[in-house]
Image 1 (cartoon, rainbow, N blue to C red):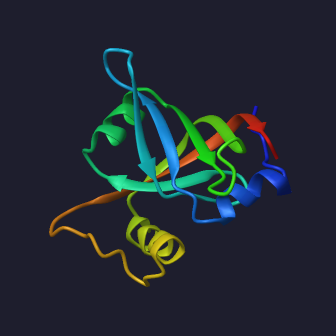
Image 2 (cartoon, one colour; image 1 turned 180 degrees about the horizontal axis):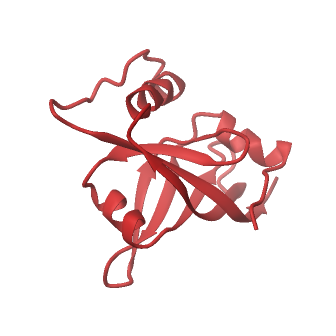
Image 3 (cartoon, rainbow, N blue to C red; image 1 turned 180 degrees about the vertical axis):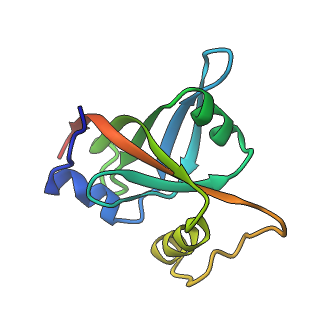
Length: 133
């Protein structure tokens, strides 16, 4: 069942808070990485490199967990669990530029590498846990 985030929950995604993304490795152990995210009203979106470990993990095991901690209060956070709803390469460069503006104030993502292919993951939330809001 898809969960729509409340206005209170959305505030975490409206700020430039770096999310901790948890995925599942092939051996079943968790992998956690910092990622830039946004919420489009139904899905949490982030961009990664095609072939990265995050990409491989999510292709094989569709589950993801995001943890965003309020930078003003480390005891206020949101944890969102969900599953991959869609993966696309079209528009992924535009998303990383949008996120670069949000997180760095730059119109273009400054760390592009020649030949890289970016992938956008859209995760549908199915469980939300909050604390300290």
